[in-house]
Amino acid sequence: MKKYSTPNDKIFNKLLALLPPEEYQKILPALDEVALNYGEKIYECRDTITDVYFPNSGIVSVLASSENAALLEVCVCGSEGMLGIAAFLGVETSLNLAIVQGKGSAMKIKTEDFLAECDAGGALPKILRRFTHSLLAQISQSAVCFRFHDVEARLARWLLMSSDRMESNEFPITQEFLSNMLGVRREAVNKSAVVLQSKHIIEYTRGKMRILDRAKLEEHSCFCYAFIKDEEHSFRL
Image (cartoon, rainbow, N blue to C red; front, side):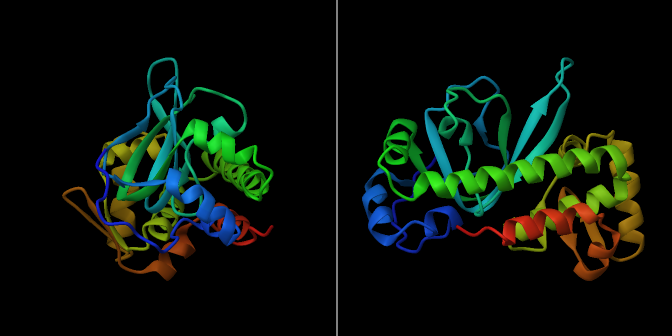
């Protein structure tokens, strides 16, 4: 994983930005800014969590696997959150695969330094407890979405969530990756994408997705997108 040579004084990660200035300055020497490259695996299933990541930009998908090695996305993480929350909860290994879906950067910290800061009696544990609640809301609502909503609505929700975190209407994505995100075969993903393309809502060519009409995409999305977004926006300490 590439480390940036130019330091960035601005706080882009929303969790770190909530820290009191003196606490952020205290943790800053332990933070390294690293690149998040598309397709890079941050954690493999059963990996020991040696580092915790606070994304500044980009998006990381967290996927669970079944007994036949099929993958399904359980949540996504961008600058609103962190990767490695299990360490905060007292778990040493990752149960899931975390893979970069959209390139960006993150602030990386050694788990031992992270836990030391959590035990220092500052604001970080309170921030992370509130983030954990937000993450659980996303996971539980996604379960509802997978069970009750059609593929087209789920695809619209996923594209909107990705666009929010990437802060862009265009990003790379493959049909194989989309099938993992939505828990369906590639043929179903292609069929839904064709429908949205025919309505001039998206453009999907050569592994690149572009949102052409966000308002219409929101109309095609299920309630789950608004629910998850409202939960994230209600994040208050």
